[in-house]
Length: 282
Ligand SMILES: [Zn+2]
Image (cartoon, rainbow, N blue to C red):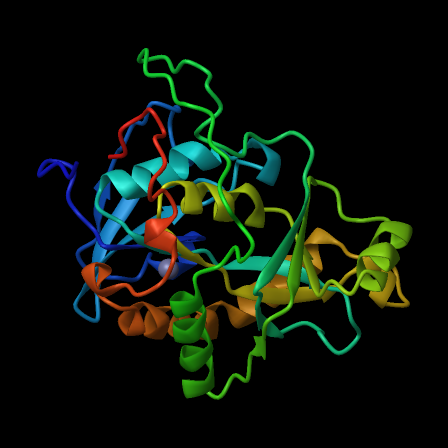
C-alpha cells in the first residue's frame, strides 16, 4: 500500500549517503515496519525520470555494523513506498589476485556464511501486530535479478569500467575480517569476492518479490589473496572514497536502464506465485 503522506518510489538503492547527498529535492521520509525500524529514513528523489528511494544501509554516520542491520525492516520499508526493484551496491574483498582494488564485479551467485541473522519473513513467528505468517520455502537458485544484472553491467561498460560479469559473493558474519585460512578456503572453493551485507538482503528481497541486484566494489585483496599485512578498515575506506564517484555514476545509469516495474520480465516478481504466505505485503 502506497501512502500519499510517505511519498512513493519505484526503485530502491541501499548504500551509503555518498549516493544521494548531492541530489536536489530529496525528501526524507520516516517509515516504520512490523519488523521494527529500518537503518534510517528513506531519502526520496528523482533520477533520470525515475523515482528512487535511497536507504543508508548502515544508518547515517555508519553506526550499524553488518550483523546489527535490520534487513527485514529495510526491505519492507522500501516495498511499502512502492519500490519493486532494488540495487544494493557493497564493498567487498577480492579473493583472487586479479580482482584487486577498484574491480567492479556483478555476482550471479552467493554463498551464505553468516551465523546469526533472521533471513525470512515467513517463519511462522507472530509479529508484534498479531499477524502470523505461514512457513514458506522459496526457490533461490539464482539469487539476483537477471534484468538488473544486465542493466548494471551495461551501465559500467558505458562508463568504460569493464566489470567482471558473474562470480560468487560469499557473505560472512563479521564484523571482523577473515583469517588467512578462511580466506584461502573461500578462494579454494572458487568463490570470487567476500562481503558482510549481501545476505540476507538478497533473499529477503526475493521473499517480497522485489528484483535485487548487487554491484560489488573490491576495496582490498582479502587476507589469503595478498602477501602483506591483511585487510584493515582504513584502506577499505580509502579505496571506497576513491571510487565512490564513478560507482555512483554507474548506479545512476543502471537506475535509468531498469525496466518499468510493470514491464518486468524476470522471475523475481513471481517468486510467491501459488504460495500462501499468510501475511499481506505492503
Ligand atoms: Zn527481477
